[in-house]
Length: 185
Image (cartoon, rainbow, N blue to C red; front, side, top):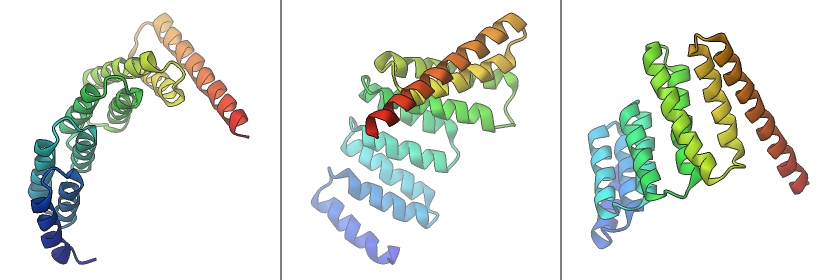
């Protein structure tokens, strides 16, 4: 339970197997918990050097950057993960989720920046849905992103069309949920 006692053990484990990324993750967590964010990031970068094509490394980096409130670095890590897993719809869904969250929750952003985030989120969620058309969570987030896009739309007809599409996606997601629940019960 004492991080100062664990660190030497983890360092020794890294010496024994420098390719094992979980040891770098453990050391990064110890450093982050101690408030040494530079060291934590350095450990995650060593994990990346050890396995530059491992999507898990980029998930760890994204999580770290998100906790540090470094949005651009978070997205860059998630994007690299998606590059490494081009056929994984969840990789693109995750990116869309973070774009929506930033646009929805960060009240310091200007409208133009929010529009840009929504557009990038829609691009990512469309990739997820191209890979898996019945991806319930992605359908839900596409609807949320379309609703946000509608808020920025000045043309009433276009605004209504976006809302109508969002409702249709919500209905699709609910229908998929019903089918999934019925299949499990």
